Length: 124
Length: 124
DNA sequence: TATTTAAGACTACACCTGTAATCTATTTTT
DNA sequence: AAAAATAGATTACAGGTGTAGTCTTAAATA
Image (cartoon, helix red, strand yellow):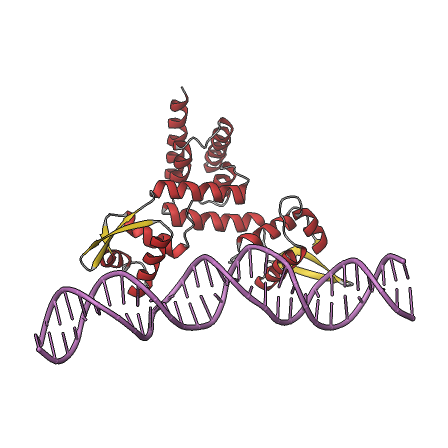
């Protein structure tokens, strides 16, 4: 699958919020969090197109971008990759590391329980 | 904290297996999985030293390397970073993504339950 | 002792990344 | 209509990364 850099991912993430969208809309969305120059974001959009992560249609002089990949697919692939590299493919050690260093809130625990619950229901 | 590239991490990981160790021991350990040239690994060792991830002592003409950072610390930091970037800092959506795409085994579930259990005991 | 080997230091080099600036053509605005 | 703003295309450029090759020196071997 496609490999994205951090900055590229953040631009794509701004598009995933709501699409299709023009470059200026994406720039607008990113302006809250990032101090990126407009030119920087356009460069990143170009690279995303080149990598096949986005497609676009022309609307006069402007391009209207649409993601070519789904966020869930991309994050799942990255998660698998991450867990493979750092935890030999097992997910519990990651969660356990969080638990040991007090990174887990009661809410996290509740959410995790629900995930487990749903998984078990699904097994039947 | 220190930023390591993928290749650098793999070299450090080979040292974490057992240390202190010489370059040739590390090269030996990596030879099973990777097709890296000896020179490549030495370059990476040098970069790891430069980044402060390793220290070494001289033993005659050889260096004896020791990790300067703990694996658990490094992976925890990377995990936090990862979960922040992809899941706004929440861990459950990652696990949930795995569940939805059938990436979880019964063993994973059992391990997760244990982590939760331990966490809850620890809260009292 | 002359030669080969092996350790680390230094150099190389293309591609990726972050971060724009400049160029060109078209709209807007005055 | 002339000038200014704006869209995307092209160019830039330093630092990181993967992947070694060469240089220097000392140790091992013939």
